[in-house]
Length: 241
Image 1 (cartoon, rainbow, N blue to C red):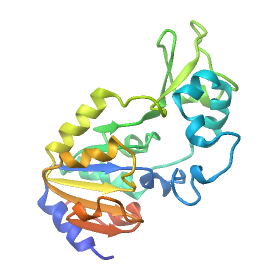
Image 2 (cartoon, one colour; image 1 turned 120 degrees about the vertical axis):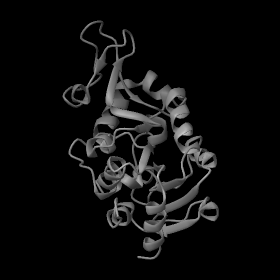
Image 3 (cartoon, helix red, strand yellow; image 1 turned 180 degrees about the horizontal axis):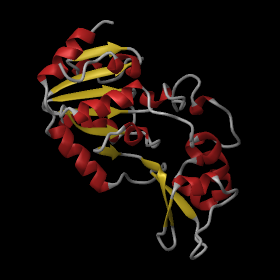
């Protein structure tokens, strides 16, 4: 594969690698990409997906939100793929310092990664909007209609960033700090079209590698661009020489 030897060289020479990933990291685990040709944005529902997964829609029509959310946002059978596993391995050998992800599926942690900045939250964390009580994802999966709190009856909300909501400031600060200290930033499976997340790469003082199936607006800034599936590319990398 073109660029694989150079990628290995960069990894071998680096000691503070940060990985920044998007939906393409999880497509090989069976979770569809929102923006691909067969992704959610290209399917037809009563409302556009962008509308359904917005803060305003959740507040005004939580039952319809949860109907969509359970069917199209929760993939309980998904397992980490080669990319998730290799990143966890790179962390274990002391090469990788952090994962910054736009995904909400928790697959990085499932693979063993410990320092993960989830820019858009996680389906695995849910809380009562009224009293703040926490609930696991099973509570959402195993109920119908609007899930409500056992203690106060408030509506339970997934800890995911909906359209119209701000990213968590502490998560953003952690991600920026990790990237600003990186000697190598590997970006994979993202179109780099969603801001402010896509703007994080400007904080990287080191080399930048882009791995994606399609071109991105940032290809010209990268030291190395590899066209391919992130799992296939990272799966071929040796974590320790």
